[in-house]
Amino acid sequence: MKKLIIALAFITLLSCKEEVSKNVDYALFSGTVTNSDAKTVNITGNGFSQKIDIDEDGKFSDTLRLSDGKYSFTVGPELSALYFDQGDDINLTIDTKLFDESIVYTGIGSEKNNYLAQLYLLEEKSETYFGDIFKMKPEDFKKNLNTYKESCNSLLKGYKIENSSFVEMAKSENNYFYLYNLQRYILRNDSESFADSYADEITSLDLDDEQTYKKSDYFKQILAMSVHSKVMKAILDDKTLSEDKVFIDYVSEFKSDIIKDDLFKMLSRKINTNNKNSEFIYNQLMALLTDSEFKEELKVSYKKTNKLVKGKESPSFKDYENYKGGTTSLAELKGKYVYIDIWATWCGPCVREFPALKEIEHKYRGKNIEFLSISIDSDNAHDKWREMIKDNELRGVQLYANGNPQAEFLDDYMVNSIPRFVLLDPEGKIVNAYAPRPSSGKLEELFDSLEFM
Image 1 (cartoon, rainbow, N blue to C red):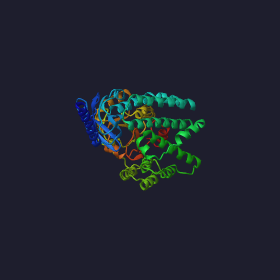
Image 2: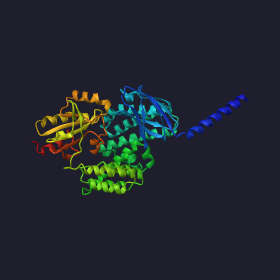
Image 3: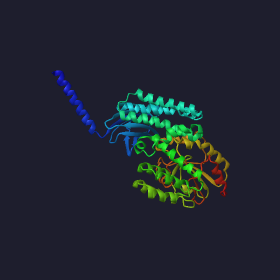
Image 4: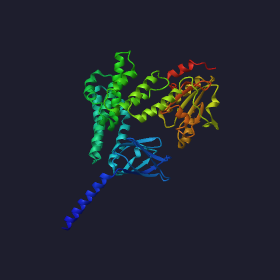
């Protein structure tokens, strides 16, 4: 009888726990960050965003009221993925000097997140591998890609994750990763001998599947590439067609408003001063978008775009720190053409432009042009900014945007990705708000078309 009472009490306790877990609408997230000057851990995803303060000992802890699903966290410029279920109590330890390699999760919900961390490392280590297999014959490529997918599924199986929904999602994502790379192979190699497999495995997908779209990042990429391919095929078949109009007409046929809106948002990136179709795109998107919040943002950005056309007075800045000492304002550079490079130490594509930028500077030395570089690094990267300038022997005027990546000057120029290049005339008016990169031959063409005194 005593055993029966204990057993009944245990069953009752389990029932209470299950009832409590059903009512929980939050997850707990804590951890320790080492070797970082970052002040916060930032969680984003699924329309959710929250910052958690990191104390002096590198510790952080907070309650996250969010829905089940995949999210991302950042510490400084570094980013990684994680998955929360309501009721999780996850603890993270991370060393930012190693970052991905150092991530370890413990606590309730840790297994699925340790899997995601190791999956990312598996993908990262395979970057060279993937570069190599894209050169293989179709049958060898597919065989190797299948082997990789099996490795991902074996990794998942090894963690013995009890959450069946997560396991199903992870297996599905591994398959979409496989299909995504299969599609990339076809587009890269234009392989007719691979066309049947491509048709069977890619084109049979329901690209209008809203539920899959919301869950899978790789499905989204497959969709984007498929749309682009269909649009390009249409305009190759009929060169009188407008790429932007074909895109809008094709996307309008989708049933899912979420998918349509996201694709239309991608098209909105083409609204800039160098695109003669900007007004057409803007008017079409304002009529077709269902996301009212984004439409309001688009209105604001379109007004800003119209202020960045050739011949308009450039937005300005004052008193940015100069690497050589003191401060510099944009107004001080009037009288010369000014080629502006907006960059950051953590931006790989920015750093890769250094050699070409130095070459261009040397070629036009003594001409009536000033080369101006503006770092948008945060405060904790100030020393790294100075070191990088010294180590790379960067010339021109090197400025630091006061550790404020959201400075008004950058906002006025709608800088949402870097590197970004701008060219001004000697009167401080805009020549090109989206000027070519130094590594582009088009930049020299632009310079040579101007009258440098």
